[in-house]
Length: 281
Image 1 (spheres, rainbow, N blue to C red):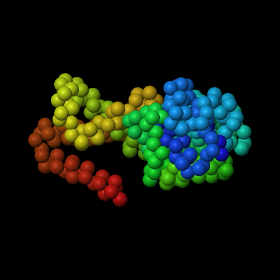
Image 2: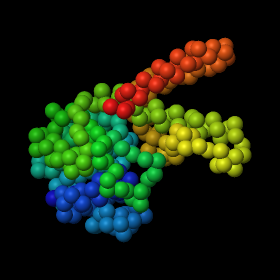
Image 3: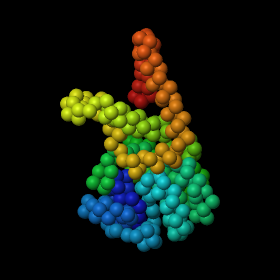
Image 4: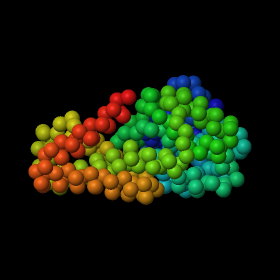
């Protein structure tokens, strides 16, 4: 099987490395506007050949879009325009409703499978790609009933080859859930980083005193705006909903401290501890 990966970065590169490792593909075309990423992809044996959009699609059985979600919405219809009934297209976007809606009435809609690998880091580019990145993580397939059976079966095979466990849901539910477990985490991290940068002017002090807890909490603040502004934009309503609740929770902590109500503060913390029961299952 030959594959074209549009977007030779962290996600696309990691997928390519894993699929090569598993023997799923014999040849990978890299398609990217960033010439440096393409050269790095060749040097790291992530891709086998650089290609333009038309040639890459024409010569591939599977086309994977691993690009920001706003670009996916624009490019996916054009990709579907170029595929045959024997080719499959999948994306890796962390929002799904807007992308699915964009191609709902496309004549080749059935050749597309909406996919989201639940993994990512604050790093970017093919040099950050790791073959084992997805192992043990969830691979979400959305609106599978709208995809042709053979296309869905192929993408499901890819999910298992990545050593992920598949989860099936509709795009609307996916976007609600990711707002709560992923998107709000990034906003919180950005806000905390900005808070510290505003209040603590001495960079050396931050470096010397930063604990593992602080570092892990603000790790996501290193993530690039080119990826995350489109995600927040595409999932705005869900993100605003969870952000309002988050602000409400922060106000409870603020009020408890202002009123020196330490018993209530303890209750808030104890209630938060319940998350351990979910995450440690």
